[in-house]
Figure 1: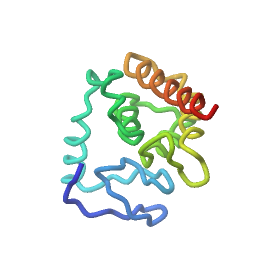
Figure 2: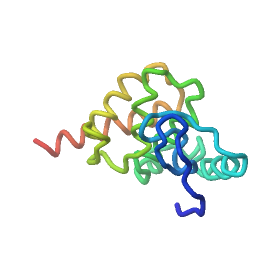
Figure 3: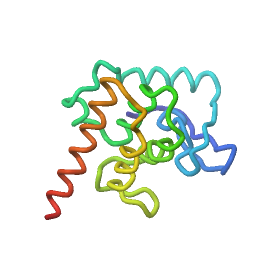
Length: 142
């Protein structure tokens, strides 16, 4: 989704990143509250993925980073145990990607393990889709 905003620097690690695409710094996970104009644009862009649209057909079309956005939007008080994995998912496109030295399969698996407190229709749909995605990947390896 193209947009015309310049990157910001993380206040903690000085990493450059797009505040519209990422709620948290992709390097250290720090939340930087951007200026009001960027926050308004970020909210408007994120509203395009609505909770009611979170069904299997829409999940199939999403990149892992977009699914992470759905998680952040739905899980208001996200578990600190799951936070690093959802943050890592923001920078992933597919289950075949990697985040640092971890493959996407590990990141997603650890998210699922640490997301037991996340409940509701959206949580069930997302976790089912992610489990199915991992199972398909493992079947294709055999």
